[in-house]
Image (cartoon, rainbow, N blue to C red; front, top):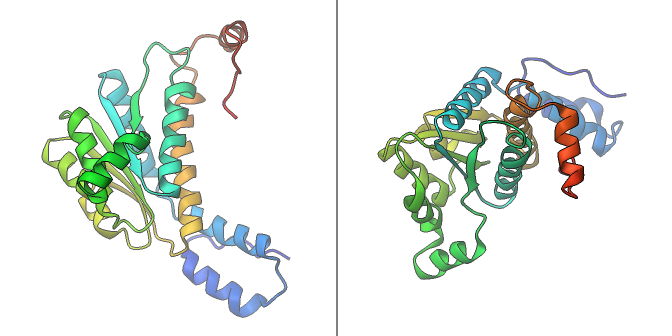
Length: 232
């Protein structure tokens, strides 16, 4: 039988209790789900709301937003950008100017090969970022040198900076103006939580009726354009 959610307890403490008290009575998926629910309880929604406000201000003032990560965090970054470029922008009078810095494989490999992987993100950021833009870095450890160096640069030129971190927050957490920290040791559940935080942000715009055309008009426009009404 699944354990009840333990509100206010850390995922690490909850995990130890599962390990010592439940033995083999829970399947792995059940155990993972219970631990994940505990992890999600640690998300600081006030910080997420602050990020939403910053994103809205950037959109309305035509500022750019840059997002970066490595590995699974790079996938989260590009998924988030896709949702913001299409789902949170289509049919709306104001659109997001947002891009994932890890998206261009030729640029990434050129800098990695000729300079260093640690400089690949910051060098691309130097081409585009302006004071008042937003730089958001996603890192489970918070210590990936490439996103950390880009965070240092973004701070130095007056960008607003956001970090999505796990574990102890690492260097990235201490550098960011806004650190949305998931204090979880397990990388899979850190990534799960980061993805949900990104959905909290983008769906605050996607599900908000203000400034949108009627849903029927939007859906008709997509059908007539031989597209699909929602991203899969």
